[in-house]
Image (cartoon, rainbow, N blue to C red; front, side):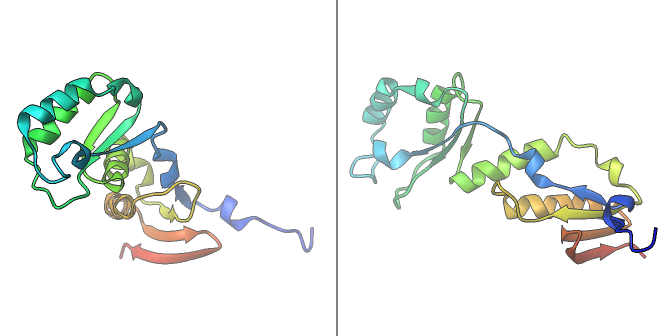
Length: 168
């Protein structure tokens, strides 16, 4: 039929790599350790331990937690570990760092499970812009994984993409 509209993208071998599909659902929580420090700066071990023991940890049940400090306090590693010891039995995951680090770790863990071989010798577009925030590191990891396999790697949408890599 003359003038028929053909969806060339749907008929192509182009594989879409949508990083949003690796978003880990679940509640996110941030805990600022400075709230348990004297004047937000000084860690007094006895008081710190007592405060942690009295805290209601069940509010973080089945969620993902980032532990951070918003002041210039020098927080020893064991303090983060001690807080984490209370969270281990209730939270699905805990990281030391800002909420952005939590998202980065969650994406990394999910992406490690993917069978990247499905992209071998194919043109791949790493989809940009979506409904959930994808950390920039996740895009870099995706590129690094598919670059050694794919024939062509693009970023964006099929209608307006940016070429990133082409195997020679």
